[in-house]
Amino acid sequence: MKSINRRSVLLAGLGAAGTGALAACGGGSGASGSGDKALVSPSGAAVASAEKKRTSTGRTHRLTLTAAPARIDLGGGVMPKTWTFDGRTPGKEVRLSVGDTLAAELSNQLPGKTTTSIHWHGLALRNDMDGVPPLTQTAVRAGTTFGYRFAADAPGTYFFHPHVGVQLDRGLYAPLIVEDPKEPLAYDDEWVVLLDDWVDGVTGTPDEVFAELRHGMGAMNGHSDMAGTPSPSSSMDGHDMGDMGGMNMGEASSPSASATMPSDGMAMKFMLMGATSKLLGGDAGDVKYPHHLINGRVATDPDVYAGKPGRKVRLRIINAGSDTAYRVALGDHKLTITHTDGYPVQHQDVDALLVGMGERYDVLVTLGDGVFPLVALAEGKKASGLALVRTGSGSAPSATVRPRELDGMIMTASQLRAADDVRLASAKTDVTHQIKLTGGMEKYNWAINGRPFDMADPQANPILVQEGQRVRLDFVNGTDMWHPMHLHGHTYQLGSSGPRKDTTIVLPGTKTSVFFDADNPGQWMLHCHNAYHGEAGMMANVAYHA
Image (cartoon, rainbow, N blue to C red; front, side, top):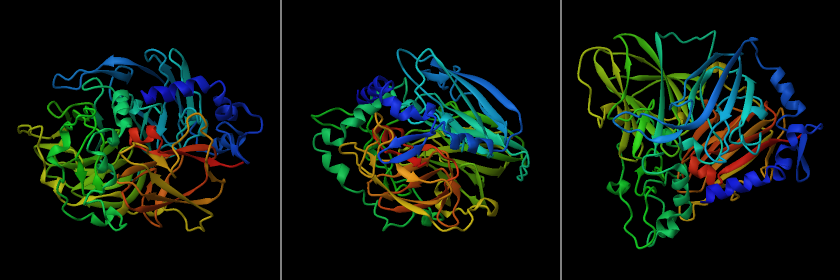
């Protein structure tokens, strides 16, 4: 399988190729080479200096995370074998306060010679703790441990997961909540809602999924033309789909979404055909998932939140999926969006919201009296996840319930506005980088600026920034698919007054401009958070030059 081949090249090269990637970790100069530009090292003096400036309480939160095979219970008799942290999926929630230090030891007990890591998704932390082999650390070998230690200086809803191969699509993830000791929101309770698309141990493994996808549609006889033909709904004249925020958006899935292609070529076990969504500008996803989970439970045997009528609850919604955007609604309730990707926004009342992979939203809801379905509709895929809110008597709805709110006012991030206290100050843009999203399903050749990321040479073709700059990134999506673009180590602002985020949906045929201040030196991954697009090569190194 190609994914294994890439990793074996990586492992074989970590002694040699790793000297370029990780010279950073021991070089006295604090810089590592990339062509004629010296780059700030992940463990150089600039990184250490930035860490000293972070807020600190002096408290340390210690934990051990053991990555190992496990058989888990997803409910409804579904008990797959997968990989987990400490035998459960999702992993146990980690919760700390702003300024606390997290000291987490990762013990890799995965089978064979499987390497792994932990990426702390959304946190602006020190570069050498970001968990991205081979860019910021050596991959953690089976049978060994690695210690992560960093200050968490921004409140918000985050999560953590591996950054090796397509391990994100197994069970190795858990929520990470950083509380604000000066929390301005008033509410009675919290409920963390973690969404995931599940294949591992049911119909196959993520590595098998990726091996099939890598053949591309071009390998499927009679269907190679589909990759280059935009869906009728994918032409949006370059407009951001946020403009459609108040519209009633019905499902636009094809009945063929779950059918295996009849062909005298390769049979498709995992590749999804015909999944379309107006909200996503056309093609909704690549992969057929047998289950969509909320808090590790299948829809036929859902997680239940027990509350009381009239209480105000903060839902922290996290999409830990690998190929699925979710349209989320709570039956018979309005949602008030308060945060996205950890940062506050001007409050917005909605019926439903669209959450791409890697995105997080915090919402407030005042509970009614009865039993209510929290539904995560797998956008464009004719499937959904389900959890229940129970505050009184009543029977549970069916696993396929579809609340009317799913077709009401749907909000996407581009229609939100940053809260005044987190909006970026006006400043002249010092550097603009065009980030062209390229590739397609025919050859499955996803890339940035036409160049797939090179694991053997992670410092090739960096996107260069300098500490102190105001940086503009123009995401230009020339592909026929949407991409949730995630920047490590920073939050950016959508446009001049949009929300502060680290992951944003970029629709096909559109340009999305984001701005950030280069205030966290190091080398940072910028990538599509579709696990399979990223592994195919849609990643780049945003590197500070020394």
